[in-house]
Image 1 (cartoon, rainbow, N blue to C red):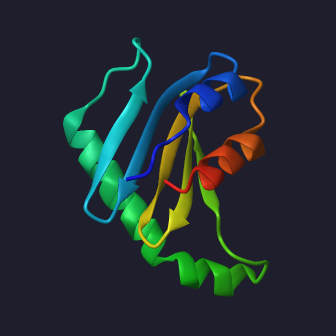
Image 2 (image 1 turned 120 degrees about the vertical axis):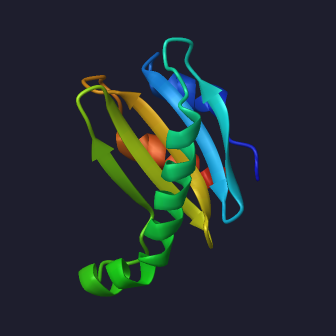
Length: 117
């Protein structure tokens, strides 16, 4: 898996970065996790499975919306906004930031996409 620019993501998220993971078809690697965010091993495996399933649906989404290539998906929860940025066939970056943080999510997605992870 390629290197994810964690320091760049930290600066872009103004202290609200919760976690960063890079994945490919074979697995997922947590490359950053804020001290107050507790990793749940079983959850990370299920998240990896979900990210790969989203990749499988890429062509469907691109054909459905007809606005170009799909780059990322965002999910907003009470405590976190989770962004899945795809970079290649079954590979990409998963980032979470605090909900309510004043973060330019398009910039975060661009950083992830440019990383090539």
